[in-house]
Amino acid sequence: MIIIDKEKCTGCGACVRDCLNKTLILKDGKAEWIRECFRCMHCIAACPAGAVSVDDPEYDMEEVFPIEEASCFIPAEKILNLIRSRRTIRHFQKRGIEKEKLDLLLDAGRFSPTGSNAQNVSYIVIQKEREAFNSVAMRAFRTYNDPKRFAEVYPPPYARDRMDFEDDEFLFKGADTIILTICPRDDNAAIASANMELAANGMGLGMLYVGIFVRLVNRDPSLRQYLGLSEGDHVATALGFGYPDVRYYRTVPRKPARVRWM
Ligand SMILES: Cc1cc2nc3c(=O)[nH]c(=O)nc-3n(C[C@H](O)[C@H](O)[C@H](O)COP(=O)(O)O)c2cc1C
Image 1 (cartoon, helix red, strand yellow):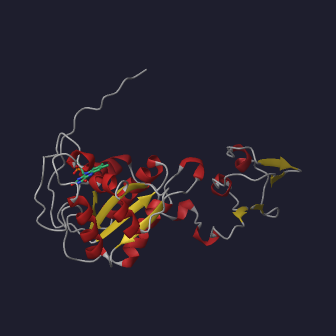
Image 2 (cartoon, helix red, strand yellow):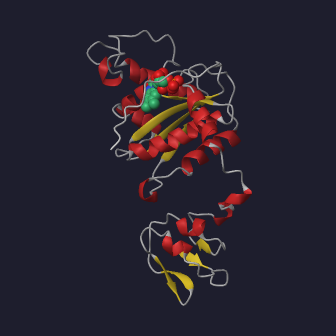
Image 3 (cartoon, rainbow, N blue to C red):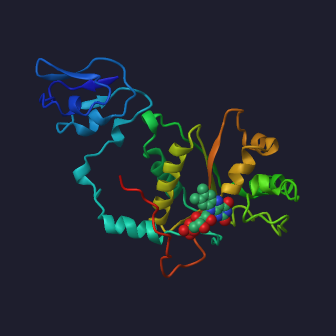
């Protein structure tokens, strides 16, 4: 439940105003939580007095920190430069990603927004079993290496009739750690993935989206079994992370945005 510390509450109404589902009211000059909600926690964030908390074993109030104490503001130009200078990495060093960095990446996903605050993105992190995983993935991929079936997993116009895969790193290009996001909604997983990529760049890591693998894993029973996926589990994104073994010296041009101003 959402708890209001009546001693600390000044009755300013900031939480009531920002409550999407009107589950907070002001009563006798103090905020009161009157019914269950989807726990977006805006009330915790909006309270200047720190009077609001959540009592739920799934949430840890120790994680909450005052925004002014952290350097949360990054000028837009810097954010845009980060977005413009990130590149898909397809050459990785043979260097393992430290556990603390992986935890930080997962936090970048975890703290990303989800529709109705569903927090319904889960993750499979493949690091120790990377070689075995790549070999199972490539075995599955090779079964589509036939002119009739190739477009199922490798869509035109880039697909060739058939490809020669010299090694098991074809899909993930030697990435040290593969993270699969599992989510019924692609949008939630895509937002988490994009934030993870930016966080990776901020730690000297690089990332590769592997769309081919997503198409493969969502249709190949052997691969799904290997990963322990249940029938309803939808793999939304497949991400390869590692220390880049390539350096980019400049940004690239993009087509103008197709925009209709109304
Ligand atoms: C959803 C998605 C799926 C992708 N799938 C693959 C893939 O399977 N293999 C690959 O080498 N690159 C893949 N890419 C990388 C794109 O080819 C790359 O983003 C694009 O060429 C632009 O290059 P940049 O990311 O360096 O700006 C994918 C990118 C996205 C966003």
